[in-house]
Amino acid sequence: AQTVTQSQPEMSVQEAETVTLSCTYDTSESDYYLFWYKQPPSRQMILVIRQEAYKQQNATENRFSVNFQKAAKSFSLKISDSQLGDAAMYFCAYRSPPHRYGQNFVFGPGTRLSVLP
Amino acid sequence: GAVVSQHPSRVICKSGTSVKIECRSLDFQATTMFWYRQFPKQSLMLMATSNEGSKATYEQGVEKDKFLINHASLTLSTLTVTSAHPEDSSFYICSAGTVAGELFFGEGSRLTVL
View 1 (cartoon, helix red, strand yellow):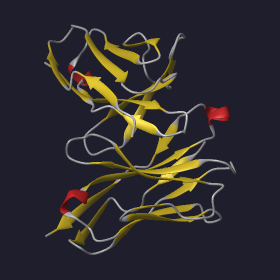
View 2 (cartoon, chains in turn red, purple; view 1 turned 60 degrees about the vertical axis):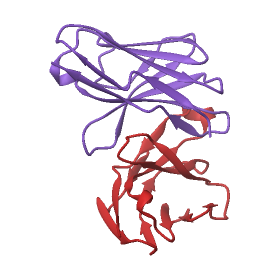
View 3 (cartoon, each protein chain N blue to C red; view 1 turned 135 degrees about the vertical axis):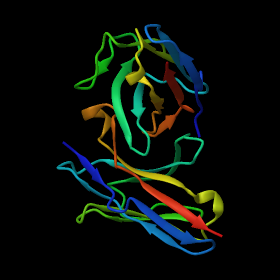
View 4 (cartoon, chains in turn brown, green; view 1 turned 30 degrees about the vertical axis):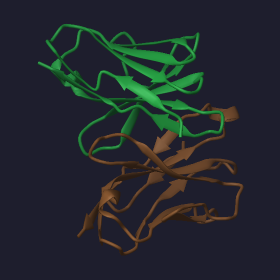
């Protein structure tokens, strides 16, 4: 079974600075998807960024980018120019190809990010 | 992104009563929806996978008679907590997958059983 690990339960960053959240996963599949979700205090889960395993290029969404290392099974999230609104719980998630396992996601335990003014 | 609406956002009920939570995909059809439970400061725990027109698939340890799931249409799935007890108090979140493979979440429902 696939597992997702986030080794940093809590992180903090100064406003306007850059922070990197770590995520590693374990799978025997070669084709899969990886995601970062954000859960602010409102508890609404928000998709931050996604990466297809077959793509070598790292995904980028404005201030958010990932460092995807397939061989190392690592998928870190970098937040640049951190803003107060970035404070939230961040979950790394793995998803198998739909033709094999439907659309079930496996979530990591989460990293709580604090942004200091 | 796609919109998933969950209702009610908060519900308080007496022990022994049943509570229904609705999850709707507002701008896309979702053949599969997922129901999660989240305890304080923890990650999401998948309870069941809801498939339109068929029985839900429950995760190990989740009582299907306690947590009834119905996915009657491509845009609506419901979770009914039957004979609720205080230990059922939790945050319940639904999600729906898109053809592109992304998962969008409802706003969540906080259930408090007195």
